[in-house]
Length: 204
Image (cartoon, rainbow, N blue to C red; front, side, top):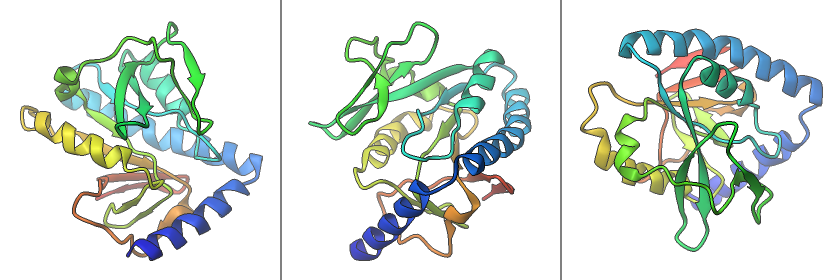
């Protein structure tokens, strides 16, 4: 299982690194237009602004920046992660005009060390989690980047999720070619229930 994951991860990373700029822009624009109605419906369902856990795209990832900017303009609260390599954990921080970013050891843009922490006790308010991944399958199976940060976050998050009236939406935004027949999943792996590509929305 681990070898097949490693092989798939390597193949997908190589292809993602070679996506032409025009294709990146076209896909991001299409995903934006598919994501907006979905988020609008969710906002109507909960009857308030959303709390959204997003991320800063990296290394040829499909750019969800426009989606996060739309959420911010709609009055939603956006949070992005900061990684802590020693503990292999993530903390969440409010994403707004005051947020100071820096580049970590892997070249990822993330909140600077001095940024105010969003406490775990508030995680139960998260309505949407945009989950990055190198590949997904039709069942929501996800192949991450090998660090296990999101899997560990999900284990901690589930402690708070039972207090929610409506289940948190886990959304993967990827190029359509990142959908594969099957992701080898293990019990601790995080999965998504919505996938958005430049071709449309797949609800699982």
